[in-house]
Image (tube, rainbow, N blue to C red; front, side):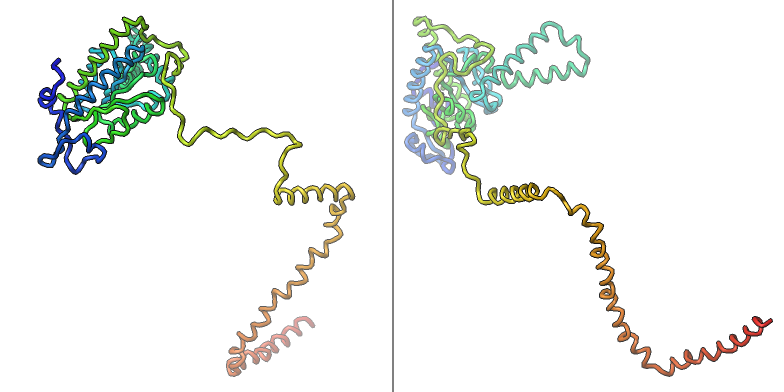
Length: 367
């Protein structure tokens, strides 16, 4: 690898920042100038950040802990994967799985599931499955492998985490802060430097820039491994099946936000229970009153009341004329019929026509 100097960083394009309109004012101490509406990063600050990060990673690895590298940008996935071949450290390059740090017990069980699937495949388990079952098995294996293959050798929580572009990897940084893991960030001019414990100002989009900085950090990790052997510190080993996240010198979690949790309500006996409210007193008083009435007069005459009180049920029948009162008002509506005496006269003459019919019927009866 090349030496760490300003010229090598310029050749890699590390000094090129983002456009002026996208900058974060907190990055002003690390910006040299603005040229053609693009910020130029001060490479002296970049070299200082790389040296401090290398020294920090060397001490972390020498103490027996690992370093997790995170970079999920599409163009940087190949460079992030080199940390495993160059230093044997875990990495995440495809997608950050929620709970990788905060729920490491479940992540460890999924890694064991991946190893079990690979073991079944090597033993010829696919030959015993149908075509559909075999396709489902391989699809599940590819999915788990894509998400966890970079951290399958991370047997416990890392001692530090290196992040490329904190804006993209904000979820990973938040989990690291919650678990008390220090974060080293490759920060561009559009990022917030306060979310990282150690920052390396530089171009986080150019492949050559990221590859150069990662290579220097790998040198710090390898130096820590040599120092680990000199001190006689054992390498990280797989934790027991319990996958305890606090075993093996894991960092102490930071205190939760909002202070400690409030204790639950203590269980009280009958003598120390608080007095009930007014609504409950009223309800209980009504229930007690009904109980007292039933105790004083156990005979219930109300059962025979329906037989003796039948006239009460007939009372609505007596009030029926009240419903018929609208019928008495009908003469007002028939008044126009009465006002036409000329038309009503023929109706009065009908009895005279019916009289002969009556006289005709009498002789038939006499016969």
